[in-house]
Amino acid sequence: MKKLILSIILVAATATSTLAQDMSKVVTVVTSSDPQTQLMSMVLTMAAAQQGAEAHILLCGPAGDLALKDAPESATAGQAPRNMSPQRLMQMIREDTGATVEVCAIYLPGQSEDPAVLLDGIGVAKPAEMAARLLATDARVLSF
Image (cartoon, rainbow, N blue to C red; front, side, top):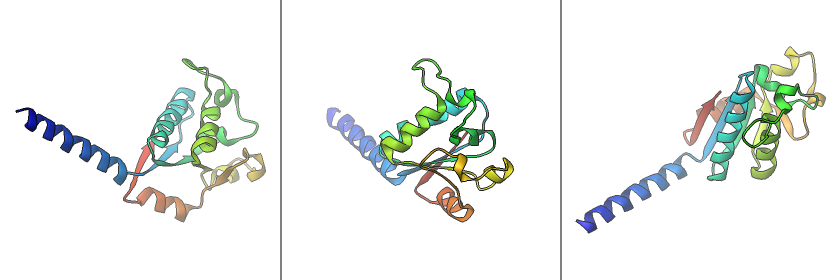
């Protein structure tokens, strides 16, 4: 019986490890204007990156404001329990894990702005490349 239980545990651990390796990319699409939702999207993206996933963050609509040098207070104000802001955690993910962060291709034109208003290291998504990331068989898409 002990051997059977040990075998089951070994098979489950191997399957979990294989699943993590198979799904090695995470694409987080954030559109919500809600600061708590934005922060939680970053918390989960950071957790995935820390577990070995290659992370890519796409900010669209109101969430695009997270990428601005002159971001609104909702993006920069610290939240409980660690007094972290959505923008700061997004920057940490990019800096600490090498994740890419981009705004939707139509975000800046919709704001009558250009890439100069974006934080350093944040770019503008190219639709064909973004579609390929979303369709990749080894990617998980998180949408907030």
